[in-house]
Image (tube, rainbow, N blue to C red; front, side, top):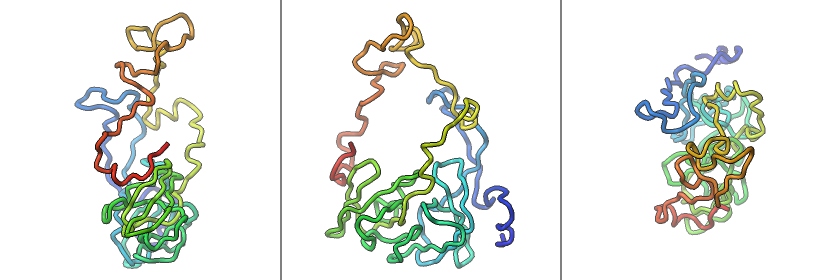
Amino acid sequence: MSISKLDTPFDGPMKRLTKFKKRNVGRSGGKISVRHKGGGHKRKYRLIDFKFEKIGVEAKIERIERDPNRSARIALLKYRDGEWRYSVAVQGVKPGDSIICAEKAQVKPGNRMMIKNIPVGVPISLLELFPGKGAQAARSAGSFATIQALDQQKAQVKMSSGEIRIVNWDCYATIGQVSNAEHNAVSIGKAGRSRWMGIRPSVRGSAMNPVDHPHGGGEGCQPIGLKSPKTPWGKPALGKKTRRKYKYSNKFIVKRRK
């Protein structure tokens, strides 16, 4: 595809970088396994480059696009060798900017480099947790992490949740905060837009009968009458810890999220 083609009004994503996405809409074997999901507009999945294997090859941002499969904006990159790829865009980059993934590079939004070469306190995103795994953390709209300290080939990185985690300083990260930080401030506006997004209506448990939900029953708007909220199947709904007690990554966590 020529650059002149890209200068024309946007007419959809680059076809060679998309694929058909099968939507299970909350069903497993035809039965509902996740409630309140179904319908929604058709989507094509954009093939996002999370591995960043083109080390040392400069890329130019041709355009910034909206991706229906994620909250962040994505950037269409054209590398110097002629290859096209999609990447998650960070705040502050714009069409025409040049970015690069290298072991050591200029500290500017969009550039990607090893953590050991990033100054302490600089916001980072698309963070590798293990060398060679690609971007694993800080990938959603507005999220970022911060390097707290570097010592003995390890880095202490503070996540958006407040958790402080140990990461090998040979892991790569992108400079800057993930784009579209105002994502959570968007008003859906009407019920129909939720349906476009594949979200079906939900009914409050307190509006049901006791036979249908633990919160049900009573005259008018009654409290739930329980110590803590429950699911329709009687399991704790809020505040229940679900993380495995002896998870392998416990040793990498210095401070838990609040």
